Every structure is written in structure tokens, then in C-alpha cells.
Image (tube, rainbow, N blue to C red; front, top):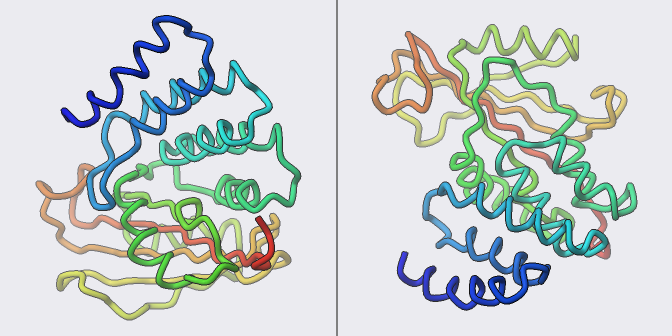
Length: 239
């Protein structure tokens, strides 16, 4: 909007004078993603990724720039790139790096479609209240939401091919409309997960007879929302 243009103009002017200013590219990226807490994810995410990428190219060891780029890549469901971006400069026990790695390792059904807006909403509505303490930092890196035109039975079969004993239980329905069911499974520890993923919750909301016009993907008689929520705990003293 007009307010964004007002802030963007001096940044663009600075880059016209010197396109090699990494800090200006970083702040342009930040500006593209500065939105009110309940505003929708916009097409500016691609622009933010481009600007943050320029900042990293110009100052490859700057942790702040890499953290920003990794978070934008994660929001765009570019999980492998997000992990590589941050992993180049941090230790393997860095909390943000571990959270990104956890999510990268989660298998996703090939037909599933990422929903960036729902991911942010789920992080704000569920992840933050569920784990509000300092032991659970970085809630926006703990959630990813996808849609798929499959029933719960097929989704469960997909995950049981990876984790044979994984069990989905029907959960308490929230404010969702009639005709929906919620199922929850939890990868409790590293030995059960088999890939080092601990305390990852998989929540599936199955919607029967959905209204096609209001769904994010083409549907027939059923659609499901898959949300991953990472409850990996860190000591409060960790950065």
C-alpha cells in the first residue's frame, strides 16, 4: 500500500546509488513481509526471498540475513533450501536449524498442496498458545499446513508405510463445521520416529462434502487439511 511505498522509496534510492549494500537489501526483504498480524500472505514473499538472497550473496556470513532468508524460504515451502541456507553458518544444535531440519524430514504426500496462509494462522492460533514458554521458541518455524483431496484412511496409510505403529486417534472437534473430523498422531521420540524427529504432532482435519468454491484445491467428496506441529523442547537458556 501507500505506507509501504513511503518506506520503500529511500531504500530503492540507496540501492540506485550502490546496489552492493547488503543491509539495504535485507531491510527491503523485511519490508516486503511486514504485515499486520492477521493480514493475508501476499505475493511479496517472492520479492522478500529475492531481496534477502541478494543480502546473503553480498554478506554470506551474516547470521541475521541468513535467518531471514531461511524463514522466508520456509514460508514458501522450500524446506531443503531453508535448511541449507541456515546450516551453512550455524552449529547443528542451533534451535532454528533443528526446527527447520525436523520439518524437512517429514514426509509429505505427493498430491498435497502447501498453504502458507493457513500455516501462519495455525502457528498463531495453536502453536503459540499450546507451547507459550521460553522452552518452545520460534513458533513460526514449528508449523506447516497442507491440503489434499484424500480421506483420512489414505493419509494414515501413507504415514504407516513410514512408521508402521503410528496411530491416528480421533480428536475433539473445535469450531469446525458439522461434517468434519479431526485426527491426531504424535511421533514421541527419536527411536519411534526413526529419523531424529521428536515430538512432532500430525493433525488431520477431514472435511466430508466440502463446498468446492471455498476450498483451496479442487475437490470431489472429501478434502483433508494436514498440519504438522513441532513440540521439540529447548532449554530456556538456549538462544
